[in-house]
Amino acid sequence: MKEHLTAKILNVILILGIILTFFALVGTPLIATAFFKSAFGILNHSLIFKVSFCIYLCAIPYIIALFKLNKLCKLVIKNKSFSNESITCLKTIAICVFSEMLIFIFASLFLKFNTNIFNDFTMIPIMILISIICIPLTLLCLVFAELFYNAKEIKDENDQTI
View 1 (tube, rainbow, N blue to C red):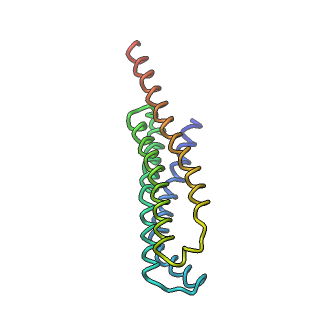
View 2: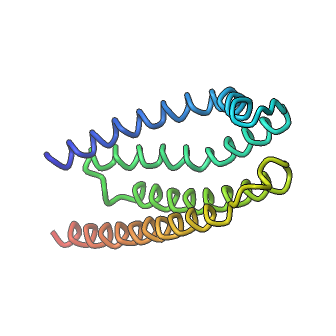
View 3: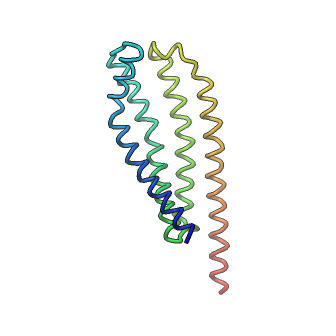
């Protein structure tokens, strides 16, 4: 019962996260315009377009991972934790985390070399930090997917012997 309560709470938090993400993505150009205008006194539409494009590009795997995590919570609530769907969700989340890291690194490099304002920022430590976080998360999701697969096989084997 407690596991279901935890999964339901996590499901509600994920739904709120999805809603807040969509609101943030809708407001991204406005927020970028306000930030560059107030912090740097710049109102360059090309710069705002490039920054917004990079943010939208980075948001794609994040949103996919949020929806897959939401689906995984629903599977836990339905007592279908060790199913092929949960294994697929975990593998998809792992791919999303790794692709998020790659997209972030390439977007940061794109902004650094294609806009004048990002030339002064040191982005290498941020890229290393993102890599240090994303690579273990990817491996963790893949290990959990393999663990769920082995548990599903053992469960199926036990169901056949009974």
